Image (cartoon, rainbow, N blue to C red; front, side):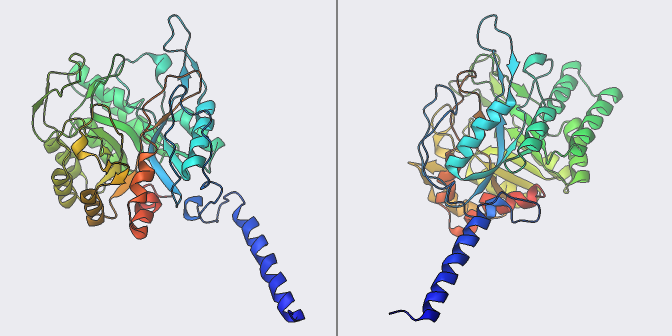
Length: 391
């Protein structure tokens, strides 16, 4: 039979457990540990997919054992684009709500949202930049942070290429917009692009040398504010013919090398942090581990954002995951540079029944994390992102 002292101790421990559980269940407030550092049992339960991308079968995967940050994601909040004669409408809040459902399923605790790279003279009704995303981040501060420039700075670089040079007035507009974005609370510039292939009708081909004068100017501004540049760029160590499956036009029949120009951008200002995004999603066959290793060794201000997308036109041999398992060669590569990688699944979250579905890639980050030892998993899941984006 238990003594009164033993009964008292048992009751005290039980009460302490209940109080602690209630505290951990509270929302994140200023001064608390960020939510991605706390194991969230509710997020970790398998849930039935609801909503998500309209018409797309969701990958059912068990959630990550630790909370993690996705540093490169999109909200598809514009609809009425695909129907003949239909008017275009916006509801980014509905897209954000849809994204938060998936965040809970995967134990994703924060998402960095950004506009995709936009063409020069793109139709205004489908163009947006940081302003709308700032509103989402302010409304849901525990779930979203925002990055800006894809819908404003990218078109200005394309404008310079279109007119054949950078005038003083264009450079002034570009720099003023970059300062505006940085002062707005954006935690990075993106999605910027130096090489963006067109995959289908209506999907843009965008190209600019990474050492373009406006990219160099942006690097200086990024260094000034200590925020990174999120850069979409196909890997082209050498010139090559357009890969099979891509159409020309709008893509050119020959793709020119861009790695030398990327290295000039990296060397221009070592205080500018450049994140080369979509690493592991190789559309040229040239994104080899040997190339990535050489660049990381040579350029301490280069970081890489990991993406896994199965299928499509990308080159399978350079994907990080095979049969839902992280490849041993990629594990060794990540272990070699543990502080230089973040997650960036590049998923577009739309509005069920209203927006066209995009290929699903958000589950890829879970596969990557599950293949990592715990210390490295924490770095890539959230610690590197915290340092890089100054959380």
